[in-house]
Image 1: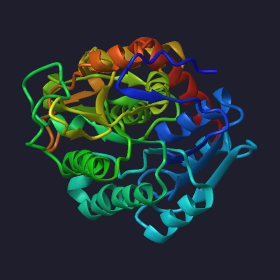
Image 2: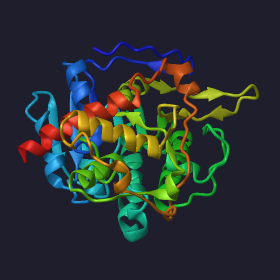
Image 3: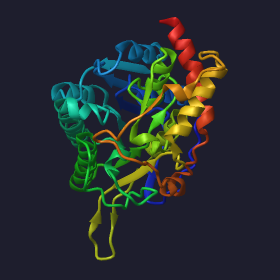
Image 4: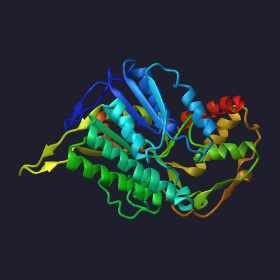
Length: 360
């Protein structure tokens, strides 16, 4: 069972045993891993998972993730879309969740240029429906996913949640910043304890196929070239899935409190954190480590010429050169410390990939 290490005095702490936890996006990469961790760590809790099972990437992978948890006695999965207000109201009315963790969203920076409507429906309308349901049913804590993309092309690193983020470079980033503003307004108006988490490049087994490490692996095994943007002058704060999940659980167990200034003005029960590895990796080094692990696993030949399969290309619209999280507030308030280095994380991904591709 997870042991809370939280140190935040501006929060109220509670246990998850015998609690009802709603996870949206439960068939997604982070959502499914989080649901499994809850089910393993808190055997008397009830987990309600919802997901619309859309085909942004292969539905078979979403079904695979669910197959690991759907038979658990205290897991209830409901197929539905957070953009459907009647559906969300029905879920809240039936289950009355005490903790709500909203991970459902249309992800992907580049896809937001191709299909912007999906981002408005899921990330704006859907999140509004979640907030409205929280207003009516008042859970103990709302935790929701934001993104490192809100920082845009900020030159100051590491990124701090106190930095100005008024210049998004993609619609996806704009929707995530909107989520933070919407959540703050509802926290202020209706005393809904809410915490936003800005995720930094989450990777690992059963991850998203549209992410670089997954797509690179697919292409390298097919003998194709991989495109490395900004001519390799990119770095990402890669964060392993287990570290992300542990951080979410610690945060979810401590809701921010309503506070007051010295002159009696109220401060919303609202918090915002970066959740990352705080150790950016150059994309070229990342590719070399991934190649090493693919060779180790026998998926590529030992004499594989990775240099011949690299294609250095310009930066794509919506992308940024560097992501780098300042996680000191999360460490201060919750004792958060990522444990998984990039080589170990990619080793675990490659081992999973070999097994998964061998079974479908």
